[in-house]
Length: 119
View 1 (spheres, one colour):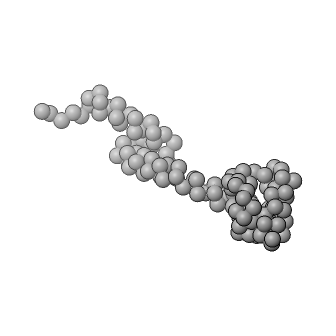
View 2: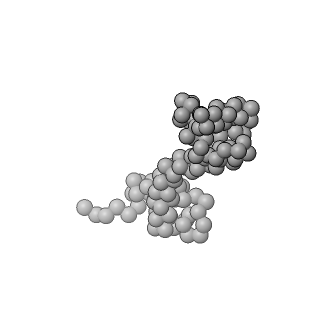
View 3: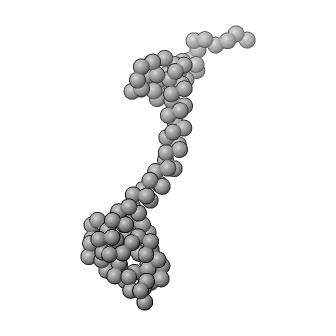
């Protein structure tokens, strides 16, 4: 059986790869061989980074909460300990949102955590 060089399936596959490589720099967007490698690597980075994004946001929330806590005179770790002792279950995303948007509610939560830690 002869090797397919210019068949429809092969052409469509190349077109699909080159379409995915649109916007890449240099030969990577026009040369099939280099585009194929670039697209493969790009897709693997995208897959990996979709998972890494969760950790990135968690880190961001902790930084925001810590900054707001220190303004109230308590460290992040003491706040988390105080929340656990007070029986307040609130996730970091919501806590960071409160620290930025609703300072009065955040102060109330910090106050409860402080009393739970000290008493």
